[in-house]
Amino acid sequence: MEEKQKVLIVDDEPRNQRILFETLEDLVELKAASSGEEALSLIEEFQPDLILLDIMLPGLDGYEVCKAVRANGKTSFTKVLLISGKAMIDERLKGYEVGADDYMTKPFVSEELLAKVKVFLRLTLVERHLNDLNIRLDEKVHEKTQQLLESEAKLISAAKMSALGEMAGGIAHEINTPLGTIALISSQIREFLTEDPINREAVTGLTIVVDETVERIDKIIRGLRSFSRDGGQDPIQSISVKHVLEETMNLCREKIKQSRVQLMETPIPDDLLVLCRPVQLSQVLLNLIGNACDAVENVENKWIQLEAERDGSSIRISITDSGGGIPPGTQEKMFQPFFTTKEIGKGTGLGLSISKGIIEAHHGSLNIDNQCKNTRFIVLLPAGAPVHVKAA
Ligand SMILES: Nc1ncnc2c1ncn2[C@@H]1O[C@H](COP(=O)(O)OP(=O)(O)OP(=O)(O)O)[C@@H](O)[C@H]1O
Ligand SMILES: [Mg+2]
Image (cartoon, rainbow, N blue to C red):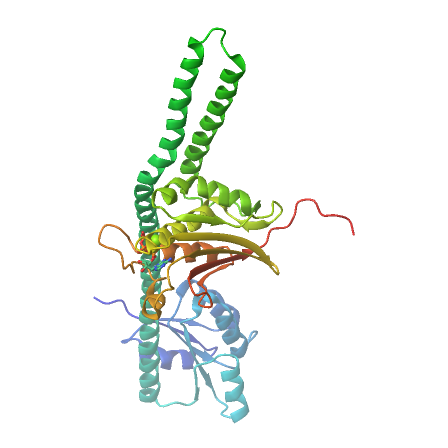
């Protein structure tokens, strides 16, 4: 059986209480209070759906009880029907002002009261139902948002893995070249060792080159390690643009060379500082350079140019390639996830959308520069503050 709805009668006259009881007892679960104070404590424990509230009460009057009901978050669905012997318009308006839902004057016709009570009880049912739906909807939205965030994180890591895979070939070159250098030096050292007397100076010189080459490999591996980290939780720091670009180039210089692309690097001043998570900025630059490399694959004159400069309170990093710009149709879509013009298996189409997300999370922007007759992407990021501020 469905639970009965609850109505609280607040009236100090036993006769009135009785009439109300008789009118409603078949329909609802009832309780009665004879004063404002008693009403308030009963409301707490009984949690009625509707209160039939007399205005003239000993102690706290009906208006004050109504105000307290409205101020209490637990009774926000409770309906209040004021009942009074007086029917002055001012009184009624005051009732609405303190939050009553309706007003009836005594003496009332029982059938009308019953009809009104039914209307309000139906209203509370609908409101509670709507509220439940809302709560469930909120939970659903929360759950879906959580799922979206999770799948986004998975996509990002998938994209990064694919970028890593693509880079693996490149990295092999990055490391092969210095390894070749070491192998060559080793055979040179062996030759020197057969001479008598041994040219110690030459051998020492060669070992220094070995040390430098080992350091280069070490740098590549360190860069690779940091690239494969997420980096999204790293603190934003003020860091030299030149340093971030060098670390990035350590991971793709050889690939660029192998693709026979000429790399033009405009010298960057040491004191140009940018506010960023270095690992993430490096990931963005690698994406943009990777795109540039792909874009010039079939261009006769292949080059990529990297520039960085201060622009007001921002740092502008431009990556330009010798391609002839991007057609408007592609431009509209290229920042959307999964948009790619590359063959299946080559591109995920996530590079630019993830890069844009990263840069915007840095309060920066990533855009294409249509003023340029070649293809130029511009990363704008807040400039970093120098650590040592000179006294004025
Ligand atoms: N420098 C560029 N020159 C010409 N077109 C570009 C350039 N950079 C991006 N695009 C276009 O934008 C598309 C989307 O680039 P995005 O980096 O998001 O994905 P992708 O490179 O195709 O795939 P992934 O980055 O996963 O390898 C590319 O497929 C290409 O059509
Ligand atoms: Mg890409």
